[in-house]
Image (cartoon, rainbow, N blue to C red):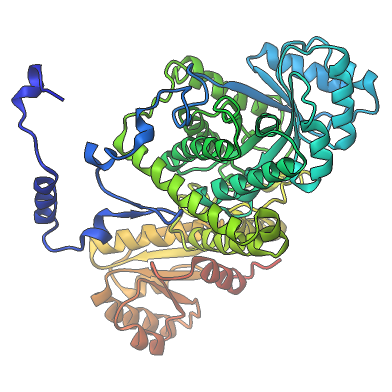
Length: 582
């Protein structure tokens, strides 16, 4: 590239010069610990990327709509807004679908609608001609009903179902052998892996492996690769790791294209149809409007990553049946991204980002490697039946849960920056409450326990954050302790003191001494002596982990809270000590 204009005024800087400048600024600190980011997928990302990092990647020269479709399955930008309808009655579901379309939706997904016969199906699809329709909870009876319906009349838009073909290859072959125009009967559900704990790499690899199993089963029955590939779509979750999620969609399209052509399929049939659905895993009962923000960034990632259709889970769906307002908010989020943020104006808007191109390649390589390991062990179905998939997901889920429990992974409003005065119980519908795994559940259990107890007894424990000594440290540790207790719905009061007698005179159920490590022994000795003199038995804990911890325990300090504390165990223990029990 030749420099022109103002760029010519800036001399080129080599990577080595950048590295030398960085290491000088680090002043001997460990480069990898300070600047290399280890993602939950096991990928290592650098602090910066340059053209040389992607120079060897052949796929970056392709355009949107060109094989291997990393930049998008279509040459044009945009996606369809899929509205999910939960009504069971066909007439009611039809009315809800038409209302959603009038309000901006482009595509309808029926979840759980009951169809007894063709008359019910005609009623459901009345005035929806030309609208893409998806049946999420499809069974073999519904598939036959749809086939018979479409053999008699044209719908003029794709009808798809959520039926997983991996469970019954014989029945799947019955449909794939004689394709029906506008019917895409099967879906591989990658989001079920994500709900069970899968990383982005695992979600891609397991979805790909399941689809390859399907392709192989159809090939054994004499079906062409084109027919098999054209009969399935993919449903993937959208997690909260923004750039990783963008790269996930890009890498999946590329890998599926490679898989289809390896079966002898054409480039045209290797185009992937991906539906993206916002994750349930990171949604919360407390501070639920933060779910709106989470869903917005997730939908952005799917749009930039080139998803064909997107549905947003209403922010309150994890604790009650969504109402008209939350459904409208979910729909309008996509309308805003389309019309106001204009994310549908450019195909592959992330293309050209060295970082994004590099992590797309990394996810693709790691996913392909994992898929090959599954294939070498006998394929997806065998790995699933033997428990290998479940064991892998369980380990990944445990790691995610531990990261949230330890607060390394932040769920805003739940395990960090919580509002201890918030009450969630009045808004929860126990019948509807989502029982699927969510990362916030462990902290929500603590919060709900506190909320129930406070509601039943009418008494809120008085937790005093006694700030004393070094002004900087006492404030920092007071804020840290307040944030910890707020995670269990326990409000705190912070006050500044000049001596232990003042603290001892305070009315509190628990005292948290907040100061600097060198001062703790002196202040604790003073405080506990004053409390003994006043015959006060209020437990005292230290906000910190000073070297004098053993001496402080001998004095009578009840506990310590600091960065290495297990927050869930700590809060559970002190709930019990404060009389908060189920």
